[in-house]
Image (cartoon, rainbow, N blue to C red; front, top):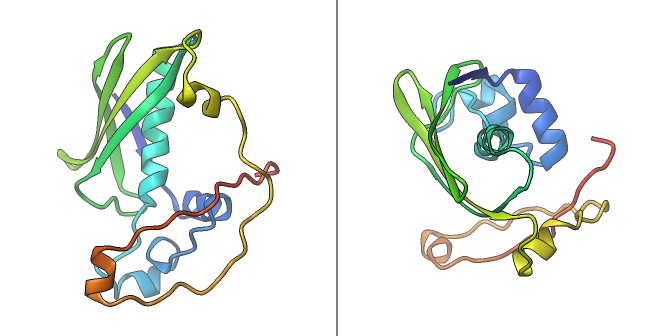
Length: 161
């Protein structure tokens, strides 16, 4: 079991890395007026915390080939969470991130051996480009438009961060 608190400083650092500067994660005054009533941790930050611990337990010679995450409960900034490894085998791992005894997120990861080669393995060995995507104003969509909305953004990595 691993204990963690995501601090306001963690939120700023993750926002700098990810580009996600949503006030829900960064601004305590604005966040208290939003859906959760206060600042909450970036979901992907919590996911990466879980993946990091899974990788640490899996050791060398294993590579992620698939992951599934379910976010069940928001994680307030500075709240204590516990990560429990529910299952760890050569083929998969399952973890639960808990907040006050309740499940906040579940993560299931499948592994492959480093020697196994497929399209996923080829992609995993290359780093994303260092150029940041062009920033633009998000489109406002109606409820009907949101239901069928799909899209993608280019992956980038600020190597200094």
